[in-house]
Length: 426
Image 1 (cartoon, rainbow, N blue to C red):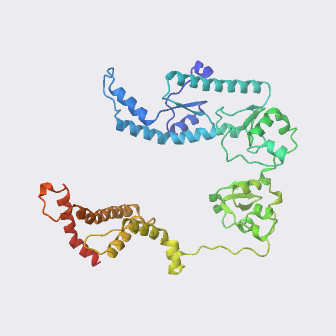
Image 2 (image 1 turned 60 degrees about the vertical axis):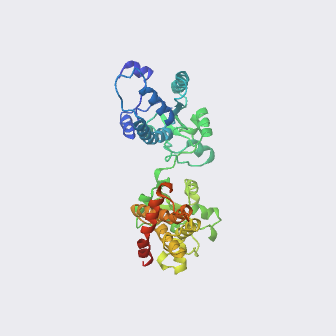
Image 3 (image 1 turned 180 degrees about the vertical axis):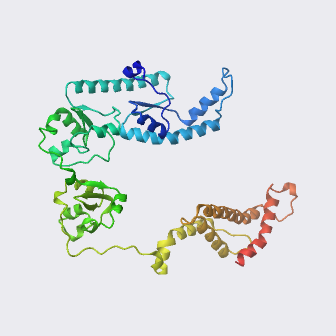
């Protein structure tokens, strides 16, 4: 509230660092013009922590051990990634400066970013005062303010509509990188080239000089989410769910009938249309030539899913467990396990069984971990034969002359006799 802060700005140090703090700022219409992040790698952080703990000027202990610093850094990185994505997408006001440089290098870069921000604001104010169009990128306009001051074209690009006869819907892009203000209203453009044309001659793109005007809301297609499409049940999609754009572009041939994806749906004149992908959906924004197509009498057969359990045994094995079996066979072929007191065939079969259990993608995680431990123990027991064979000699050796773990592994090997009998007998 200080008048100096209102006129010259202020620095908010170390805030926000969580998404909740971002929401609190936006609730009070506070969006930073520039966000400066000083990045330092973990090794340098730990190095500075050690130097700080050895400092003779340190009068009392702090919670800054290497373990605590590592946990704090990890937590910070996790929290800051969501904030970076939000500010970078909406306002492009996030700038990274490496804190390992000298303090003067950091200072110069911060001053440079601040000067560019002030220069941009001054340019904006001068153009608005002269009744010209001005870019509003990096001016930290809140979504609520944007919605309240949108011009007659709403979220559509006026330049594309006038010059190319295309309606480009920008409602899915929250960025204001290519947005401009003219006569108190905001207009969003589809590209840098369109923005430059609008800034040069804004009068020809808006009323009353603009020859192309935005159609009424009823005549504009509206994108639907998957939940909105499902909420319209039992209303069916037009053209039985086939993509109208691919059908027309394919000269309305049988081969051009491609089923649409429910993720790319629009509503037009209270009808639902589904498209193959985002690119074909965008072409439907001017729907006059697409919306009233007629399907041919002959349609492609409906592709219905086939249950795995209805397949013959070989087909079921191929589609259901082939990948897991191939991995298990590859592993047993590489290891060539031989379990104490069991033959090679039995040893290989048991290894495959443990491997399938340990890496079953449809099993619970705790079960997979349980059998992974059993598999590791099985491999260790298989290695006993090779170990004992390499260490045993024909002549008796005193215990002090034997390897340290020889007696332990020999006893372990002999104790597996009764376990092998249980495994062999099933």
